[in-house]
Length: 281
Image (cartoon, rainbow, N blue to C red):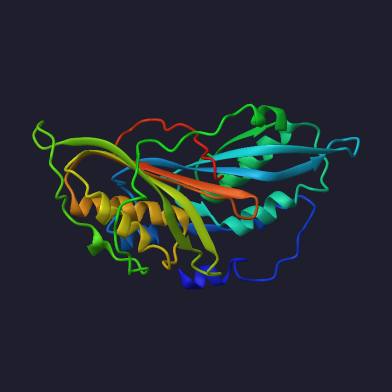
């Protein structure tokens, strides 16, 4: 992985190209980290997708007039590769001084280029500013656990902080159904060390999750270096190791950096997640 990242534009001074250039996109294979977590890349134990919003997309129409859009990109978690975010930003900036006949042409180009790099179909939707303004922010679902009275003294990833619940279990065969969220998620880019801030949501039916220990565990990511998608898959795997679940969904809504926000969603349920957007995004 380190050799691959060394070849990427991460952590390097990069000149901005303003003429369309799909070669700027850089792929990161998912399989290495998944094998580290004990996930078989050929038989994923979850469903999901990575939802990106791009707020810095502009090009010229055939008359030379600038056009701006907000973009939504949806990558399946089954894609062999994720797309490194700095390369994604450089790629989107390469549209700035390029002329296109329509927004549909731009969306088609982007979908084709992203799909080639991810090695799986990527869905692309472009919004006008007026269209995007009409979208309300979504509230973080479920119970916020940020006010739990806990002592936090570990800021390096530590899954042993997860503990069995001391809370009373439900009567239905000990199964609890609840959704929890915390705004205290922070991890760091594995190359540049820049902070990645986010809201983490855990929704499940199964053995009671101890709220305090979950919060301490999430705080242990504070100095952890890993990509957004990998952090979410790590949380799901760790929870499955410590608790018994009939259903489990884990997702994170990360704040934008470089005009992009990344929102990985993973679940044991084969359902279609909503395209959420929280207030800090």
